[in-house]
Structure formats: structure tokens, C-alpha cells
Amino acid sequence: MVAQNVFFGIMALIMICAALKVVRTKNVVHAALWLVVVLGGVAGQFLLLGAEFVGVTQVLVYIGAVVVLLLFGVMLTKASLGEEADLNMPNRTLPAIIAALMFGVMTYALIDTFRDTELPRESVTNAATVSDSIFADYIVPFEAVSVLLLAALIGAVVVARKE
Amino acid sequence: MLLVQFLLLSSVLFCIGIYGVLARKNGVMVLMSIELILNAVNINLVAFGTMTNNIAGEVFALFVIAIAAAEVGVGLAIVLLIFRNRSSVDLSSIDSMKG
Image (cartoon, rainbow over all chains, first blue to last red; front, side, top):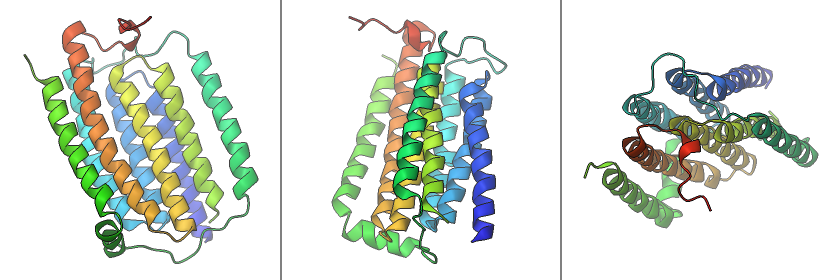
């Protein structure tokens, strides 16, 4: 239990610093690469929670596909590879206040409600359990997601196509 | 492990994502911040699923991952279209639907 808490702390610290770099850095490509650190940390947290399959899917889909897609977007919109001055809104105090306020409210509510809730030990779920559940209980949402992916695919091609 | 530590981590990521969406001007950077928000939600779903010993949390985290992939595809297509029409992805200059 202690080792898990230590690893949680290290990963959480790295993730928070990397997430701050994502929203603060002046370099678009560096932001995408810091995003990889955050997404890898999230995959680590899934493994810590015993969700093997979600963790592996996180690495495959997010780090493998989404970040590459974002980097393609960076390249295609001709962002300069060095630092860019014109990335942020002129007024950034208000967003910071909103985020801090939201964090304060959520922290209060979460600590007030779940202060002593322990997670159960030995709760590793493997891919077989997840797939049994998807293809038995959640087959209709699963098919809906596949139709949604097809629609998004066609929509992206239609929107981005040259006339 | 306590449940609340995962919930607090995800709320930190969520608020950083909110800050990024509001403070960034570049379209691609806003999409990156949205990815941060969706990941925060996923940590919450898996943590609550583990707490209640229910597989539904993980299944819905997988659905959120699939929908995030679709979202970033369509979002980047829109950003590319904006770039082609205006040769910039500056979101503060897109105000033709402003009342």
C-alpha cells in the first residue's frame, strides 16, 4: 500500500507539472510532447487502479494516435517550430481565477464527501472481464460508438476536403 | 490507497484543462486542453468503478477514449478548414457569428 502511494505521488507530481507546461509553454510542438507525458501518467494511474485494459488502450489510442494527429495538425497549420508569441489570449487572469475557483469548490466537495473512502485491494480486472461486459451488457452503446466513429471519419474527410 | 487522491488529481487536471481552453488562442492548443479535460474524466470513471467493484466504470472510460478520438479527428478537420480560409488558427479573430 505504501509503495503504491509513493508511486501515485511521483506520477501525480510529474503529471501536474507536465499539464501546466502544456497550457503555459510558448512552443506548440513542445506542448504536444508534454501532453504525451500527461497521457502516459494517466495510463500509469489506470494500471495503479487495476484497470489493465484501459491503461493499454490509453497508450495505444492517445499516445499512438491522438498525439500524432495533433502533431499533424500543428504541422499543417504551419506553426513555427520555435517559440511563438501569439498563442495566448491577452487577458489570462480571468481564466486563471475561474480555474482556481472551480478547483477550490471541487476540492472542498470531494474532501468533504470522500475523506476516508478506501479503495478495495486486489481488484485487478483483466481484458476478458471487460470484453465480456462490453459484448454482453453494453453491446448497444458499443455499436453506437462504432457508428459514431464512422460518422466522424466521413465528417472529417468531408470537412477537410479541398473543393 | 484512498479514493480521494485520484479524484483530487483528476480535478487538478480538469482545472488546468479549463484554464487552457479559456487562455489559449491557437486552435490546436485548445484541442490539447480538451484532451486534458477528457483524461481527467477518465481517471474519475475508473476510480469510481474500482471503488464500487463495478466494471461499468472501465467500459465507459473506453467509450470516452473512442469518442475523444472521433472528437479530435473532427476538431482538427475544422481547424484545418479555418486555417485554409483565413490562413491563421487565431480563435479570437473568428467572430463572424457574434451577435
